[in-house]
Length: 182
Image (cartoon, rainbow, N blue to C red; front, side, top):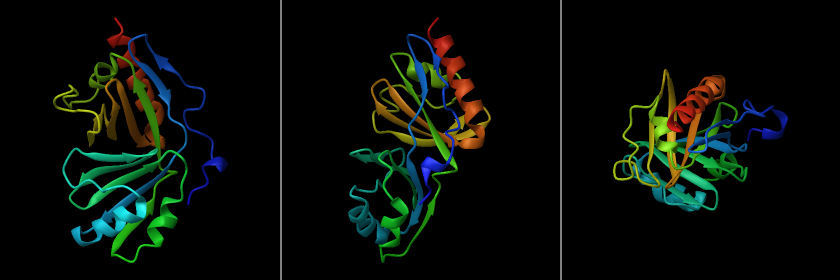
């Protein structure tokens, strides 16, 4: 498991947005890129304490742990409490592949009544409540980078991106939030 305390947060001290959309760095979390066939989903779900979603654009969340469907056999697991996801995965006998991506990724939180508009300034997804409801998750783009987007509340989103692109993503989101506040 990656020790988050040993690494400087890539967006430490950053803040942005407007009254309508706030942009803030998320707290450190552990992350796992998980690949598995249909026969392993039940066993893995039990081990991680949540039902791995099996439909496009869906997620499952329990007590700060999230499983985001990224493909027919692919999930991104995020634990906001810093649990050892790799340790859990290593105890599962069902055939799967797990890679700790905690140091690769970081997250940006976008919240407020204009949060969807702030993200939409650089993201092509329809983020309306009917097309992208609470719990929806998708791998998409923000400007020129790949992100994974999770809608955590009516006015709340989590934007996962690679740390090396985090300043770019934060800048795009902050600018979108300022524009959405006009």
